[in-house]
Amino acid sequence: MNISDILKLIGTLSPREQELIKASILNVSTNAMKLEKLVIEERRTHGIVCPHCGCIENISRNGHRPDGKQRYLCNNCGRSSVANTNSITSGTRKDLDTWNEFIRCMVSGLSVRKTADICKIHRNTAFIWRHKVLDAIQKVYKATELEGMVEADETFFPISYKGNHKISTFKMPRKPHKRGKCVKKRGLSKEQVCVPCAIDRSGHALSKIANLGRVSSKNLHLVYDNRIKKNATLCTDKMNSYVRFAHKNELTLVQLKTGRSKKGIYHIQHINSYHSELKGFLRPFKGVSTKYLNNYLLWHNWINLNGSSIQDKVNGLLRTSISVLADIKSHNLSNRPAIPIAT
Image (cartoon, rainbow, N blue to C red; front, top):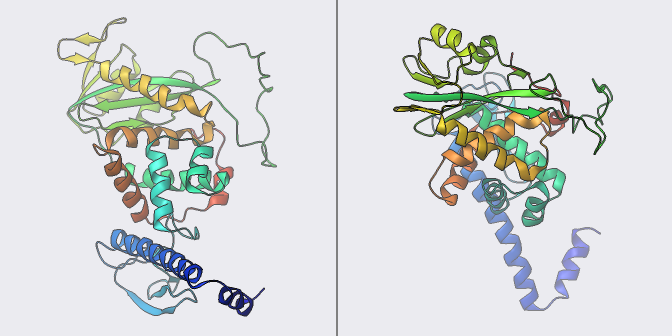
């Protein structure tokens, strides 16, 4: 069927039905324009930037694509682009309403299947979009610094190799744990990933996979260096790793005795509460693959910090993720390391 056939079919419809089709087409076109306008607005606060090399202002117009989008040419790298090149919306062919609904589902912490049903997209698309957004936010989140009174402690998650088995080069490093037959080891082991977490009194939080098993001062440096401001006060438990870390980073260290969570104005109640909320956030996902865990940690931090209302969080997450210049390809998701240890 070609355009001529479609036009003939439309001609057989009643005037009312033809008006409905026209309104639907105009609405899709308008929403597509709204999304492009939002991308331009967020990505050009400091002028036109080449999404390939990052060059500013050395850009010229270069005609239009068949779909009407303005094309640009970078005079520095010689590559062509449109407004949303190398952004989370690149190649998605969905309008602003769909993206708004998707981000709202993320802020609500909904599963991939529920999100797909609400947004009328495939579940695989919902999964890919989720990590496109979180990958973009990771780039922004690297600038986050904690200050003032900072509480720190580690939490642990069992290693999950979900999402790796379809990769031809992947080999299980251990025997599979059969359902109902897994014998858990007591205490810490190399079967658990250590996630150091820190939070200041303003609610800003950091959390990232560091290593397997017990944490060392070297692991703490990999996660926290340049992320906690000098002269901050660090409140922790009695682990020796924090003594060496605090000394090297010029932090005032307050360590609480085993079994105690408070000493005057110093306490680790916020970080204990953070761990509880984090585990509660992850529980409905029924076991997050370790390769994606860092993104889920960031997702939790973003939801719990930004904005006082759901709409504020939706606007903040959408605008921030759209503004990031990043070549985020969906096919790269499955090729991530099974255990992304900090290096």
